[in-house]
Image (cartoon, rainbow, N blue to C red; front, side, top):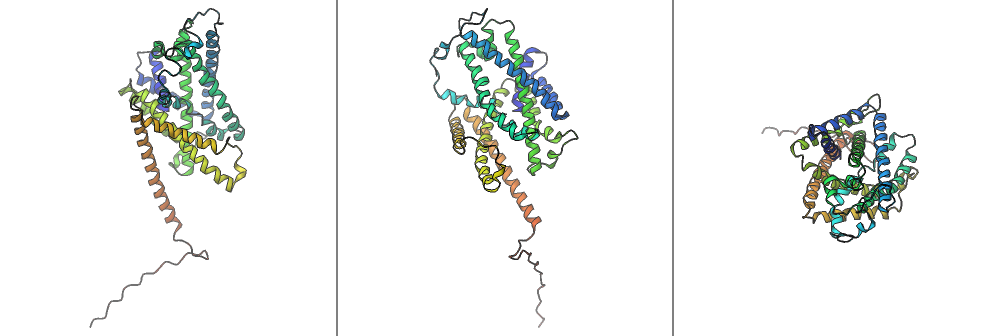
Length: 386
């Protein structure tokens, strides 16, 4: 995800200042936000407050302005293309069939990555239980308003097959169709702040996951160490490695790297969420059996909703393996290969750790709790010479 957001931000910045190449902008973005996260947790929170605030206000304003234009009540705007008829015109409601929706899921899924940050950030809040509950409940209406609402406005302002959507981007094209001066550049700025917000959050999430793995012994112990300001420096630096690798990709493959990263990130997100589903099914049973008092934040419709989510994820992954027209199969196979490599590494690491624990524990104890005395080797007696 870090690589995706760094690349997206670099594309926008290069459009404003073409003299600076795309890879250089990606490098600048990564360096600035890495330095910000290394200063303190408060620096991350301050940047995220302003990034997210600008993004939320802008999307809300876009929905209001676009909605007024759709119903023809926006003063000073005369858009002959806007209207609810765009939802069913130009080939019908699903002009390319239901399969097109499934094909686009990998592109869409990557946009929802990061919602799990609420549970990670809760550990550094004053009231984790309240923070997780409030953030989780708000995610649903936020998705409905900001994601679905804004896209609804776009496809009612412009026909889905309008060339301007492909050339300028959906939000920019929608505002330009209203004739608002400099609307496109304003929206590009909003998109940039949104990208930087996602990059900032992604860096925080990745570093805190590395920090947690270091505490549990599943990653180098250095990841679990913090500075005087509570910053896990080693975890942050290790988390941004792939983001800096994306700088090289931007330099070598500037025209194709972004789409590939978006598709692969979507597939990885589905794998991660599938693992979360099965982990939740297993861990909740353990907590209910051993420490039910710890189960203070409960999921709705457990376990049926969890199984439904897992089944839908498996269905999408299976469908992508059959998608040869939009290169979905290749993306999925590469993602499966990476997942298999990670599983093999985890299995080997667990076997090595198990042998080390067994060696430190010594021989098994007897029924009375004592350890058997080591057997002494008696030298063989040589036969007497005849």
